[in-house]
Length: 171
Image (cartoon, rainbow, N blue to C red):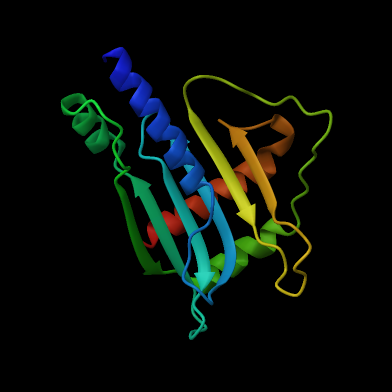
């Protein structure tokens, strides 16, 4: 890959990652959680679980970056391209989601004195849990990890992969 194309691709990847790390859902909907996965072998993808304003049922929105498509475009045109993001929504099994959330509420994630992993290949993950609607001052909870995460995080990272499977299974 030409150095200028690599530079544009890296800039585009940073822009896409910033977009996918932030939840996107319809106005008035209640955000339940947002989870992101980016790996060396797959499409960077984000799933946002929400309850639409006028419904009781859960929906999951999936946003995927068509990175290979954009890379081909950038090989032909040496200027920064806008990312090609594909957004789809699907109904989500509320019973299965609530069951996983009940399990998740019992998981404790240590933040100090843990051996965090890092690397160049593999997957990067992030999860965003919203602040309670009643408290506009409290911030969200955002956790990010690479690969399997710290060994002390295994209950959490294993649970997060089950959430991803549930969300992706809706499509």
